[in-house]
Amino acid sequence: MPSRVIERWPNGEVGTAEVAALIAVALEQKRPLSLISLCDGEAQVLWAALGFQTFHCLASLGFPPEERGAVAHDLVAAVKRADIVCIPRSGPAARTPPFRDKLLAGLGLWGARPKADALIGDSLVCFYLAFDAWLWGLIEGRRILIVNNRADQVVNVLLAGEVPEGLRKYVAPGWIRVAEATPVLLEIGQAGSAKAIAESEKLAGQTDLVLVGAGARAAHLCVEIAERLAVPAIELGGVLRLLHEEYYPGGWDKVYGWYQEAG
Image (cartoon, rainbow, N blue to C red):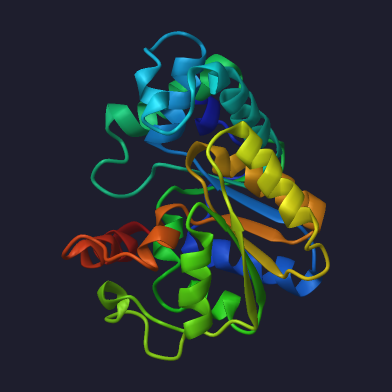
């Protein structure tokens, strides 16, 4: 069955602490590491690109009809090359059909199996890294590259060391301290992805860590940029948005509960 594809991955699952440690080692050794996160949006891409689902799903994610095949192709290629592949695991929605089942079945349809030494993480690890100083310790004193459609706003927050109100219960003042932060603004469409990779490549040797928030294109961007710049490239998804926009009331508290239970 397609849903058995991921269950047979050979190297087991890693939690937030292990993910943070892997990023830390890659930073110290100055070598590439790619972490990608797959969830319901990626499942929509995989199914719609094969014609089994109307295209409005992808259109709602910002992909024009003519690009559905290219988006899915890049996503599948990234799954096969990434070092850490994160799938729905924790949280109340993780194992519901629209999330884990649909994603795993879609990966099975494409024959998208990770490389032999890939590790499996949790799709919510991008949120979990915000707790217990994991993320803030990793970026402290580092030259950070932000690839996102609001990258300039994220960079402003990092340079100012601001802590969003919803996170202040978990992130103390002064914990966000980067050496440098540079934005690469992500434009809509596959041409925007290619442009972002080209702009990132110009910063080779000037970047320690790349944080990406790009929806279904993020996997491709993380893998390409990590390999081209020889640095860790981590998909943080909506966490980048939440650095400059307020999260829904009580949202971080809910996520913290999931982190404590299964992170």
